[in-house]
Length: 95
Image 1 (spheres, one colour):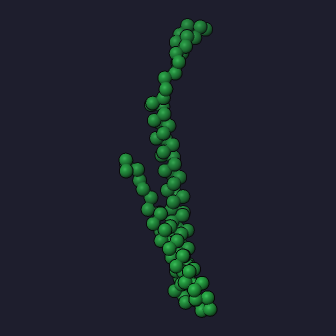
Image 2 (image 1 turned 135 degrees about the vertical axis):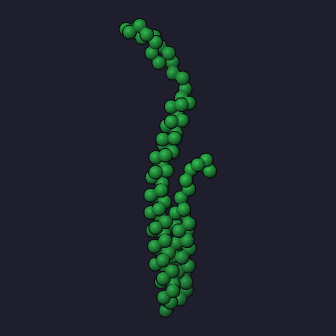
């Protein structure tokens, strides 16, 4: 885990997909009279899908920033040594 925070937004996204899938599948099976519970499945699943997606986007933005900062610091620390050159105008070593 290395101290990284995990997002719990994938669970509502997955559950919402399941609700929508069951609701739509059963609604097509009972095309003549759709019971209200299947319509409720579709709407509650849609709410979970939207909430899970928004949570994943909202948690992904800071995660991307933290990883960028971490990689930038790692690159600065483990950078390849640069060539040492002699600056003739100032009579000193330049890195």
